[in-house]
Length: 308
Image (cartoon, rainbow, N blue to C red; front, side):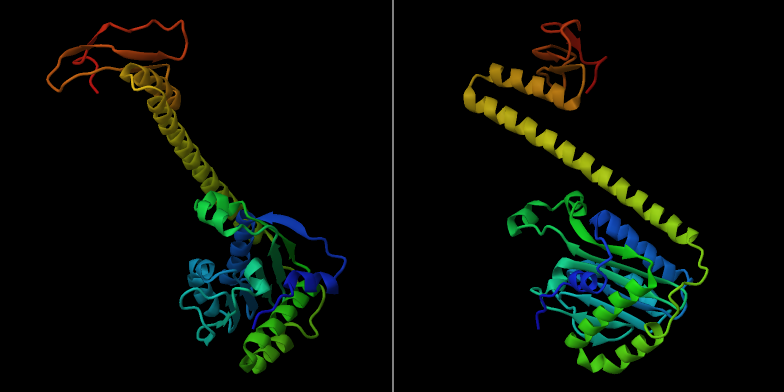
Protein backbone atom coordinates (compact mmCIF):
# COMPACT_ATOMS: atom_id res chain seq x y z
CA UNK A 1 0.00 0.00 0.00
CA UNK A 2 1.32 3.42 -1.01
CA UNK A 3 -0.41 6.58 0.26
CA UNK A 4 0.31 9.83 -1.57
CA UNK A 5 -1.50 12.20 0.80
CA UNK A 6 0.87 14.26 2.93
CA UNK A 7 0.30 14.26 6.68
CA UNK A 8 1.30 17.93 6.71
CA UNK A 9 -1.27 18.81 4.04
CA UNK A 10 -3.97 16.94 5.93
CA UNK A 11 -3.07 18.77 9.15
CA UNK A 12 -3.10 22.16 7.41
CA UNK A 13 -6.51 21.43 5.91
CA UNK A 14 -7.95 20.73 9.34
CA UNK A 15 -6.14 23.70 10.92
CA UNK A 16 -5.91 26.44 8.25
CA UNK A 17 -4.67 28.98 10.80
CA UNK A 18 -1.31 27.22 10.95
CA UNK A 19 1.64 28.73 9.07
CA UNK A 20 4.40 26.30 8.10
CA UNK A 21 7.99 27.26 8.84
CA UNK A 22 11.24 26.29 7.13
CA UNK A 23 13.61 24.00 9.06
CA UNK A 24 16.99 22.51 8.26
CA UNK A 25 17.68 18.90 9.18
CA UNK A 26 20.07 19.94 11.96
CA UNK A 27 17.24 21.89 13.60
CA UNK A 28 14.78 19.00 13.26
CA UNK A 29 17.29 16.61 14.80
CA UNK A 30 17.76 18.93 17.78
CA UNK A 31 14.00 19.42 18.21
CA UNK A 32 13.31 15.69 17.97
CA UNK A 33 15.98 14.78 20.51
CA UNK A 34 14.73 17.45 22.92
CA UNK A 35 11.15 16.14 22.62
CA UNK A 36 12.31 12.56 23.12
CA UNK A 37 14.40 13.57 26.12
CA UNK A 38 11.34 15.16 27.69
CA UNK A 39 9.85 11.65 27.82
CA UNK A 40 13.11 9.95 28.81
CA UNK A 41 13.65 12.39 31.66
CA UNK A 42 10.44 11.16 33.24
CA UNK A 43 8.68 14.50 32.86
CA UNK A 44 5.82 12.89 30.94
CA UNK A 45 4.26 9.84 32.54
CA UNK A 46 1.92 7.67 30.48
CA UNK A 47 2.52 9.21 27.08
CA UNK A 48 1.74 8.52 23.42
CA UNK A 49 4.80 8.71 21.15
CA UNK A 50 4.59 8.47 17.35
CA UNK A 51 7.71 8.84 15.20
CA UNK A 52 7.95 8.57 11.42
CA UNK A 53 11.35 8.18 9.74
CA UNK A 54 11.96 8.58 6.02
CA UNK A 55 14.22 5.54 5.82
CA UNK A 56 15.13 2.57 7.99
CA UNK A 57 18.75 3.73 8.27
CA UNK A 58 17.60 6.97 9.93
CA UNK A 59 15.54 4.96 12.40
CA UNK A 60 18.49 2.66 13.20
CA UNK A 61 20.47 5.67 14.41
CA UNK A 62 17.76 6.38 17.00
CA UNK A 63 16.52 2.85 17.75
CA UNK A 64 18.22 2.73 21.16
CA UNK A 65 16.34 5.87 22.23
CA UNK A 66 12.98 4.35 21.36
CA UNK A 67 13.86 1.18 23.20
CA UNK A 68 14.36 3.31 26.31
CA UNK A 69 11.15 5.26 25.67
CA UNK A 70 9.22 2.00 25.36
CA UNK A 71 10.33 1.10 28.89
CA UNK A 72 8.38 4.14 30.13
CA UNK A 73 5.20 3.89 28.07
CA UNK A 74 3.38 1.19 26.09
CA UNK A 75 1.97 3.50 23.42
CA UNK A 76 4.99 3.91 21.12
CA UNK A 77 4.71 3.70 17.33
CA UNK A 78 7.63 3.94 14.88
CA UNK A 79 7.15 4.17 11.11
CA UNK A 80 9.87 3.85 8.45
CA UNK A 81 10.48 2.73 4.88
CA UNK A 82 12.27 -0.64 5.12
CA UNK A 83 15.72 -1.11 3.57
CA UNK A 84 17.00 -4.31 5.20
CA UNK A 85 15.16 -5.82 8.17
CA UNK A 86 12.53 -3.26 9.23
CA UNK A 87 9.11 -4.97 9.29
CA UNK A 88 5.70 -4.76 10.91
CA UNK A 89 6.27 -6.05 14.44
CA UNK A 90 4.89 -5.79 17.94
CA UNK A 91 7.77 -6.02 20.41
CA UNK A 92 8.88 -3.35 22.87
CA UNK A 93 7.01 -0.93 20.63
CA UNK A 94 5.05 -1.08 17.40
CA UNK A 95 6.98 -0.82 14.13
CA UNK A 96 5.10 0.04 10.95
CA UNK A 97 6.76 -0.40 7.55
CA UNK A 98 5.56 1.63 4.57
CA UNK A 99 6.61 1.47 0.93
CA UNK A 100 9.44 3.64 -0.37
CA UNK A 101 6.99 5.28 -2.80
CA UNK A 102 4.75 6.35 0.07
CA UNK A 103 4.52 10.08 0.79
CA UNK A 104 5.84 9.37 4.29
CA UNK A 105 9.25 8.69 2.73
CA UNK A 106 9.50 12.46 2.18
CA UNK A 107 8.29 13.44 5.64
CA UNK A 108 9.57 13.77 9.21
CA UNK A 109 7.09 13.44 12.06
CA UNK A 110 7.25 13.21 15.84
CA UNK A 111 4.25 13.55 18.16
CA UNK A 112 4.33 13.31 21.96
CA UNK A 113 1.06 13.40 23.91
CA UNK A 114 0.77 13.22 27.69
CA UNK A 115 -1.81 14.19 30.27
CA UNK A 116 -0.08 17.52 30.91
CA UNK A 117 2.17 17.87 27.86
CA UNK A 118 1.73 17.90 24.10
CA UNK A 119 4.11 18.63 21.24
CA UNK A 120 4.30 17.76 17.58
CA UNK A 121 6.78 18.14 14.76
CA UNK A 122 5.12 17.57 11.39
CA UNK A 123 7.37 18.28 8.39
CA UNK A 124 7.74 17.50 4.73
CA UNK A 125 11.00 17.69 2.82
CA UNK A 126 10.85 20.73 0.61
CA UNK A 127 13.38 19.72 -1.99
CA UNK A 128 14.33 16.11 -2.64
CA UNK A 129 17.70 15.40 -4.23
CA UNK A 130 18.13 13.62 -7.50
CA UNK A 131 19.82 10.18 -7.25
CA UNK A 132 23.04 11.58 -8.78
CA UNK A 133 23.14 14.42 -6.25
CA UNK A 134 22.53 11.99 -3.39
CA UNK A 135 25.54 9.95 -4.52
CA UNK A 136 27.73 13.05 -4.61
CA UNK A 137 26.51 14.42 -1.28
CA UNK A 138 28.10 11.80 0.90
CA UNK A 139 29.24 14.29 3.50
CA UNK A 140 27.09 14.77 6.56
CA UNK A 141 27.35 18.54 6.17
CA UNK A 142 25.42 18.40 2.92
CA UNK A 143 22.85 16.11 4.52
CA UNK A 144 22.36 18.59 7.35
CA UNK A 145 21.41 21.34 4.89
CA UNK A 146 18.34 19.47 3.65
CA UNK A 147 15.30 21.69 4.05
CA UNK A 148 11.92 20.79 5.48
CA UNK A 149 8.68 22.74 5.68
CA UNK A 150 6.33 22.10 8.53
CA UNK A 151 4.83 22.75 11.94
CA UNK A 152 6.40 22.59 15.38
CA UNK A 153 4.03 23.43 18.21
CA UNK A 154 3.05 22.72 21.81
CA UNK A 155 -0.60 23.42 21.01
CA UNK A 156 -2.60 20.53 22.41
CA UNK A 157 -5.38 20.66 19.83
CA UNK A 158 -2.96 20.70 16.90
CA UNK A 159 -0.78 17.97 18.43
CA UNK A 160 -3.88 15.86 19.07
CA UNK A 161 -5.01 16.25 15.47
CA UNK A 162 -1.55 15.30 14.21
CA UNK A 163 -1.60 12.21 16.43
CA UNK A 164 -5.06 11.29 15.13
CA UNK A 165 -3.94 11.58 11.50
CA UNK A 166 -0.89 9.40 12.13
CA UNK A 167 -2.85 6.82 14.12
CA UNK A 168 -5.39 6.57 11.29
CA UNK A 169 -2.50 6.15 8.87
CA UNK A 170 -1.06 3.39 11.07
CA UNK A 171 -4.37 1.52 10.94
CA UNK A 172 -4.21 1.50 7.14
CA UNK A 173 -0.85 -0.27 7.31
CA UNK A 174 -1.59 -2.45 10.34
CA UNK A 175 -5.34 -2.91 10.86
CA UNK A 176 -4.64 -5.55 13.52
CA UNK A 177 -3.66 -2.70 15.86
CA UNK A 178 -7.23 -1.38 15.95
CA UNK A 179 -7.76 -2.16 19.64
CA UNK A 180 -4.47 -0.63 20.75
CA UNK A 181 -4.97 2.47 18.60
CA UNK A 182 -8.50 2.86 19.94
CA UNK A 183 -7.12 2.71 23.47
CA UNK A 184 -4.55 5.40 22.60
CA UNK A 185 -7.24 7.67 21.18
CA UNK A 186 -9.43 7.20 24.23
CA UNK A 187 -6.63 7.84 26.69
CA UNK A 188 -4.81 10.71 24.96
CA UNK A 189 -7.14 12.29 22.40
CA UNK A 190 -10.56 12.30 24.04
CA UNK A 191 -11.97 14.82 26.54
CA UNK A 192 -8.61 16.25 27.53
CA UNK A 193 -8.30 19.89 28.62
CA UNK A 194 -7.20 22.32 25.94
CA UNK A 195 -4.99 24.09 28.47
CA UNK A 196 -1.85 22.31 29.55
CA UNK A 197 -0.79 21.90 33.14
CA UNK A 198 2.10 23.83 34.61
CA UNK A 199 5.12 22.12 33.08
CA UNK A 200 8.49 23.80 33.47
CA UNK A 201 9.75 24.58 29.93
CA UNK A 202 13.31 25.27 31.08
CA UNK A 203 14.62 21.66 30.83
CA UNK A 204 13.29 21.37 27.27
CA UNK A 205 14.86 24.69 26.29
CA UNK A 206 18.22 23.70 27.79
CA UNK A 207 18.22 20.36 25.95
CA UNK A 208 17.26 22.05 22.70
CA UNK A 209 20.09 24.58 22.97
CA UNK A 210 22.57 21.79 23.78
CA UNK A 211 21.55 19.78 20.72
CA UNK A 212 21.63 22.84 18.47
CA UNK A 213 25.13 23.75 19.65
CA UNK A 214 26.34 20.18 19.15
CA UNK A 215 24.84 20.12 15.67
CA UNK A 216 26.47 23.44 14.79
CA UNK A 217 29.87 22.14 15.96
CA UNK A 218 29.50 19.07 13.73
CA UNK A 219 28.60 21.28 10.78
CA UNK A 220 31.62 23.53 11.29
CA UNK A 221 33.90 20.51 11.58
CA UNK A 222 32.47 19.01 8.39
CA UNK A 223 32.77 22.29 6.49
CA UNK A 224 36.43 22.58 7.51
CA UNK A 225 37.03 19.07 6.23
CA UNK A 226 35.29 19.91 2.95
CA UNK A 227 37.35 23.08 2.57
CA UNK A 228 40.61 21.19 3.17
CA UNK A 229 39.60 18.53 0.66
CA UNK A 230 38.77 21.22 -1.88
CA UNK A 231 42.20 22.83 -1.43
CA UNK A 232 43.93 19.47 -1.88
CA UNK A 233 41.99 18.72 -5.05
CA UNK A 234 42.71 22.19 -6.42
CA UNK A 235 46.43 21.69 -5.77
CA UNK A 236 46.48 18.34 -7.57
CA UNK A 237 44.53 19.76 -10.51
CA UNK A 238 46.86 22.74 -10.90
CA UNK A 239 50.00 20.61 -10.81
CA UNK A 240 48.45 18.12 -13.24
CA UNK A 241 47.54 20.98 -15.56
CA UNK A 242 51.12 22.28 -15.42
CA UNK A 243 52.43 18.83 -16.34
CA UNK A 244 50.10 18.71 -19.34
CA UNK A 245 51.18 22.14 -20.55
CA UNK A 246 54.90 21.47 -20.34
CA UNK A 247 57.24 18.53 -19.96
CA UNK A 248 59.93 20.82 -18.56
CA UNK A 249 60.50 19.76 -14.90
CA UNK A 250 61.55 23.31 -14.01
CA UNK A 251 58.19 24.74 -15.07
CA UNK A 252 56.32 21.99 -13.23
CA UNK A 253 58.27 22.56 -10.00
CA UNK A 254 57.73 26.32 -10.21
CA UNK A 255 53.96 25.79 -10.31
CA UNK A 256 54.13 23.11 -7.62
CA UNK A 257 56.12 25.19 -5.12
CA UNK A 258 53.83 28.21 -5.65
CA UNK A 259 50.61 26.24 -5.22
CA UNK A 260 52.00 24.34 -2.23
CA UNK A 261 52.86 27.60 -0.53
CA UNK A 262 49.40 29.03 -1.17
CA UNK A 263 47.64 25.85 -0.04
CA UNK A 264 49.68 25.70 3.17
CA UNK A 265 49.12 29.43 3.76
CA UNK A 266 52.79 30.05 4.59
CA UNK A 267 55.00 33.03 3.82
CA UNK A 268 57.68 30.93 2.09
CA UNK A 269 57.85 27.52 0.42
CA UNK A 270 61.17 25.89 -0.48
CA UNK A 271 61.93 22.86 -2.65
CA UNK A 272 65.38 21.31 -2.87
CA UNK A 273 67.02 17.96 -3.62
CA UNK A 274 68.93 16.07 -0.97
CA UNK A 275 69.92 12.62 0.22
CA UNK A 276 69.67 11.26 3.74
CA UNK A 277 73.43 11.58 4.13
CA UNK A 278 73.68 15.19 2.89
CA UNK A 279 74.55 17.89 5.41
CA UNK A 280 73.82 20.82 3.11
CA UNK A 281 72.05 21.52 -0.18
CA UNK A 282 71.18 24.38 -2.50
CA UNK A 283 67.72 25.95 -2.67
CA UNK A 284 66.42 25.08 -6.11
CA UNK A 285 62.86 26.43 -6.08
CA UNK A 286 61.21 29.04 -3.90
CA UNK A 287 57.87 30.80 -3.52
CA UNK A 288 57.34 33.91 -1.38
CA UNK A 289 53.97 35.33 -0.39
CA UNK A 290 55.36 38.89 -0.46
CA UNK A 291 58.16 40.26 -2.70
CA UNK A 292 59.77 42.09 0.22
CA UNK A 293 60.66 38.77 1.86
CA UNK A 294 64.37 38.10 1.35
CA UNK A 295 64.92 35.43 -1.31
CA UNK A 296 66.89 32.28 -0.51
CA UNK A 297 67.07 31.05 -4.11
CA UNK A 298 70.50 29.53 -4.82
CA UNK A 299 71.59 29.84 -1.20
CA UNK A 300 73.25 26.94 0.60
CA UNK A 301 70.81 25.37 3.06
CA UNK A 302 72.27 23.72 6.17
CA UNK A 303 70.25 20.52 6.64
CA UNK A 304 71.56 19.89 10.17
CA UNK A 305 70.13 23.19 11.41
CA UNK A 306 66.96 22.84 9.33
CA UNK A 307 65.86 19.17 9.57
CA UNK A 308 62.75 17.96 7.79
